[in-house]
Amino acid sequence: MLDKSLKDEQVLRVDKRLGRIVRIIVEQYDGDVKAFVESIRYQVEVKTEAGSDHGDDAAWHYGTFDH
Image (cartoon, rainbow, N blue to C red):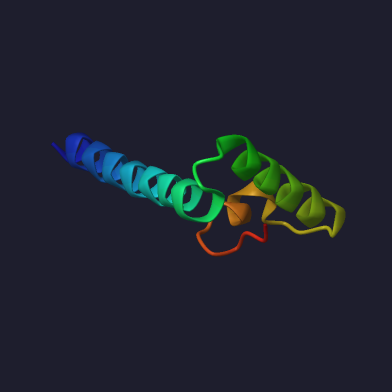
């Protein structure tokens, strides 16, 4: 029973995260997925070059994108 509730919790978190990503693509990038991916790639490269420990995980948080 615990495994099922844990799995359900994880599914909800993934759904919320995907929902945020879709909103970002639609609102900030006018539906241009390629521009969104390029922005994320750039953010990851900049953070990696700067020696950030957060890598691409930090780039996925809403509101941290510069485009």
